Length: 310
Image (tube, rainbow, N blue to C red; front, side, top):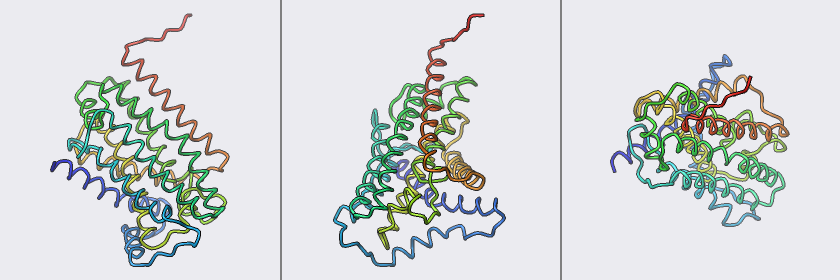
């Protein structure tokens, strides 16, 4: 019980720090002083002190969506271990629940955007639905690869089983490439460059940000917190896989999560945002890479060799 509480506390605390890591690394790489490390938290504190303004066309769906989004992501985080710290809840097949809880958070924001009656938010919702439907198989393929290697279907058992077994160099490389795939998935799920730009202000090209244009005050703060927690959950998934390969405990998991955030900042500093027409190709490429890694892991686990005739 105490280990589970400590695990969720670490994930939440790290989730609050990751945006600061991204901002500072991005500022350092661009040669700017940049905002303070905790500026994003100062912004949320200011939002919490403000009132909420709701459009006359919005209904209860619009007001409930931020709370549903944050609650579903936090519930998903309860299933994640942190190194040797076991999660609060675990059962066989909980990896499926983890994926669908993240999907519930996306669905809540899509419904809220449509509930406003705004054509701009409707465009963002349709893009979010498309990209989410295309990216969701990646999470299941990654989970399938981890389950294949570990022989387990619970997040609490997958990573310890992976760490306990002796993995070959080839399989270790495959799993580290899976971590790379999860990092690409974060760009899609969290609206980061090159899929989306959280700093943009052009409604015609926004995806996630255009869906929250009508939010203010406490609701906007809740949406921001939900986004950070989703990034923390996916970064923790990548970090646990990496630690299972390289070794380490809870501190190593946090270190890998910070490394993932720093890598996101590096990408955002040197890579331009994709044109909307290229996002589908980008996501399908991630799906293809994930499938290839799953196939390679299956061949390695089955000890199947592929030979070519001379």
